[in-house]
Length: 365
Ligand SMILES: *Cc1c(COP(=O)(O)O)cnc(C)c1O
Image (cartoon, rainbow, N blue to C red; front, side):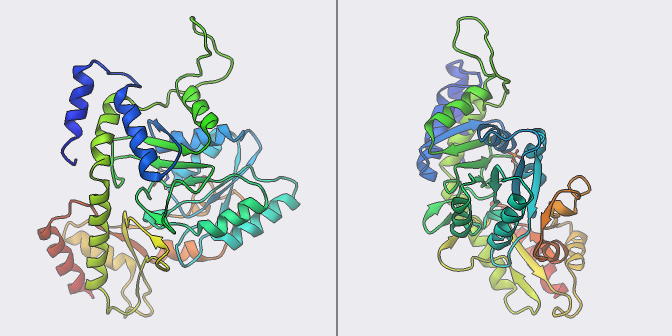
């Protein structure tokens, strides 16, 4: 926590705004709009709900196809399945580790040839690294397919000065406990389309028609953020820049410490157009070049010192539940999964903890 969260939560208590709406929700939404330079933000109870609502608003239904990045967390893909639609999975490219624009183009052409034009494209900015949005935007525009940008890990990142979350027809943010800022759990849907955001609020509050009684003409959801939780969000927005700076500092620290190790590659900004929040610092270890040291050897040697690190996301096309989905490969994400590791990257890493990580890594290498 940053410090002011409790005062906003207290305000909610004192004014008895203990509800899934209220002044904290309004102010948190305003802060998100200003920060991301989006016209509208709708605060929700999770990033997953935001993806679900975006797909509903784009008219995705049973039997439809939705294109999504394979190298991601399952929450990107699950909402496609909630709607009875089929995920079409796209592999990554080597520069950003995110959706490959060429594989995307190949997939769209193939799906159209097979008789179905995909309803939406879901790129992800993993570990805070912006995907190649200009190229993805071009492909999406060419085929007139809307983009739902999964920026759950990328609040504070930008590409060409434009914040992630503001590149798609819809942008999705998450404030889950592990993200760069948190409300304990929560999310937001961003868009420049006022009507769509109004509709998202309507759907997220049980789809009540305007009437003095309870009247419903469509299926609703209970997805709004509570005014208590939004109080935490308001406080967190005040320290977001500080948190991004800290994560970037930790990333630089790792880069400096491990710079001369052969076979070790960092997840890095391809050029100065890219600005990552470096939510997590991730590395690849090629055992052929690293004197036989593997990703698992690094992970286990850290674990021996009670330091947690984790393999990168296991691509969705390798997951038992999604292995039958159409997949357009480049070979990249499989290698990322095999050789990749997320290093301890929390904003609150102490000097003492960093010292312990450093000793352990240096000993192994
Ligand atoms: C965390 C995350 C989500 C889901 O957000 P929740 O708020 O936990 O529902 C979606 N996509 C990615 C890439 C994430 O990391």
